[in-house]
Image 1 (cartoon, rainbow, N blue to C red):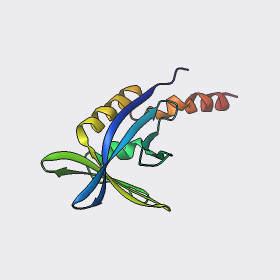
Image 2: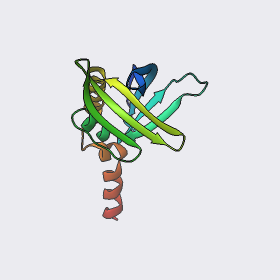
Image 3: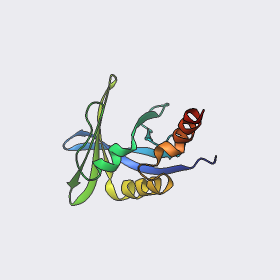
Image 4: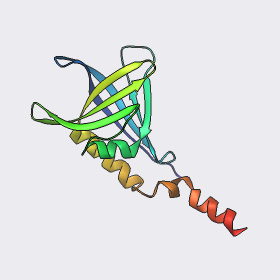
Length: 137
């Protein structure tokens, strides 16, 4: 089975305080063989990129309304008249608040939804086919 990868390089902002932020190059990545998840790789001034994985659904919903709890929270807002998506990430290593421009994030999400429509994730994993085989025995 052919797997599709949908990637997008994007500059996010790491919010340090209400007055201060620093640019953070990031890569959004979605793979059809891991259909429920999205992967975000941050290239912060260190040798090793920081990887986060969370539910695609969370970002899809977070573009429109606040959602998530625990380690990842996402919500839309406006900054100086621009639409942005804020992502609050919490880990044992610390917390980060990142700001992403909504238009490229939405465009990338739409591409992932064309590859694997919402509700079709299980088919991608072959779960249904495997269950059918099991139950047919």
